[in-house]
Image 1 (cartoon, one colour):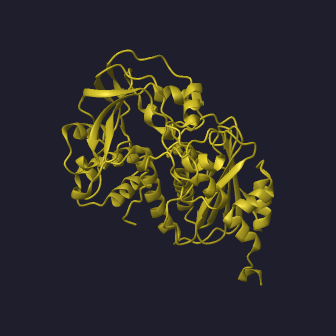
Image 2: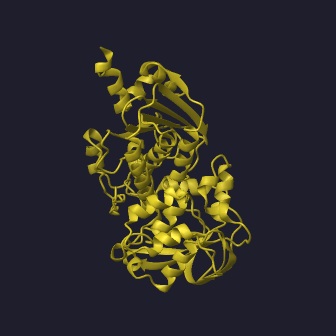
Image 3: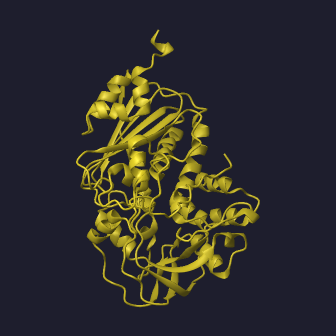
Length: 443
């Protein structure tokens, strides 16, 4: 695959109707102006990004921000420290967006502050502290600047290529605003203020990234897959991709951080799928289980050709199910030959698909995969899809239990979950099909 799929750009209107809603839900959505207590289906379609409830700010994100334990306020407009390295690209105002560096007021090895691969299992409060310590300087740029980078963009691209933390001086027009920005797609982001200027010491450049950056004939998807195959962390690829550092010279564009995360997960996982399809299938049904941050994850692998499904259940009083008294289940799937539309469950679909295909590629086998998630009230705030990606990576490294039949594997897997079996069966396309379809192997 040589193309990269980006999530649809959102139109910011108070009465936006999600295209995937049907029936009674669609009739309700058509009449929405402002919904005080939005239902779970609306929140899970929106996840704080589309403002489907008609409010100027997502009330759930505001609530999560209020309960996040934040570090001490930064009162100065000058920040001197070691950038992890960290950069950020906003999406509001597209195609003119905010770009800038992220710098903590501390020196030394700060790489953990912007490396989600190292966060899984750390207390949520610790992750919030990591992110709140990074100060963002914001400046406006056109997404087309990547074709011929401005001085600011060139400096940010050089920073993003650094192999280790870079000593940076950040000057802002005013002290940063004390806020923690939360999203289901991106990791939390800390205080920010308009950027006046910044300068860095000469960074030690990651030659793998530098090679792809200077190859202006290399397509963006090819660059992403090449960097992944050379061992560059997925989050590093996402960061450099967002600054428009890859692709054919005349087609390069800056990509908002939120979109770049899903684009890279999708691109890498699709490349892995193409390879996995050439491997023999596994020989048995397998069940994997793992729990973290009050989330229970279960994966069922079937000895069949590649297919994939991700289904998640949000319990009452969780992030996206604040106003109902029943769990809400949402999912999406793809057949052997893939999908042509963006998954309605958002970026976590692609981060999960990446983690599953990584595991199959390591083993040199093919399988159909059904991955389930239950999220309980202890999950207080959205942490970003890195949390799902790293959780599923850990899930696929657990010792699995084998079964001779799908039904045996399914009942064992659902025994780990709190939602009744029949609801999972009704909510999953692949589970329902597997239980009801007659196969030639049955004869």
